Amino acid sequence: MKILIDNASSHTAKLTKNFLDVEGLALLPHPPYSPDLAPCDFWLLPRRKIYLQGKDFNTLQALGTGLYQYFKPIPEEEYRNVFHKWLERLKLCVSAGGDYFEK
Image 1 (cartoon, helix red, strand yellow):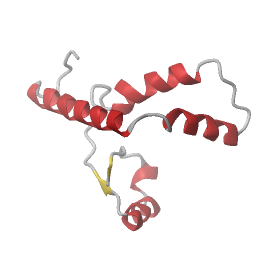
Image 2 (tube, one colour):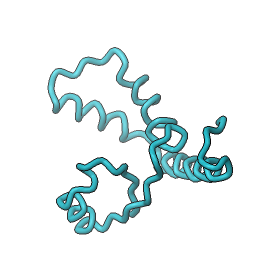
Image 3 (tube, rainbow, N blue to C red):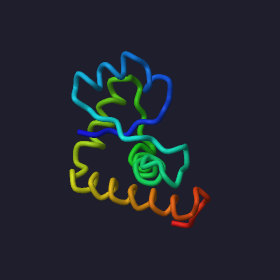
Image 4 (cartoon, rainbow, N blue to C red):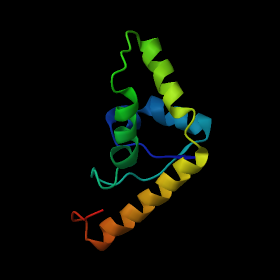
């Protein structure tokens, strides 16, 4: 299984790298930050914002349960589609020489 995470210090820490190795997760190379290229910015966050709007989570456990209920019904095929859209965005970025491009 491959995973995409950014280069935040918590993601590049030795403990994190060891965990990923033990779990057999391969990292995809992360491009420089760009909302055009970040799947969370163009797919996940807008959806999650709508889902969480108006909900009040008083505990960390309640938040975790709410997020689980959000992610669980999303079909695996939708994640695949987002991954393919992300690859297309990467190609557009390369074609644009790294400059901004319209969706």
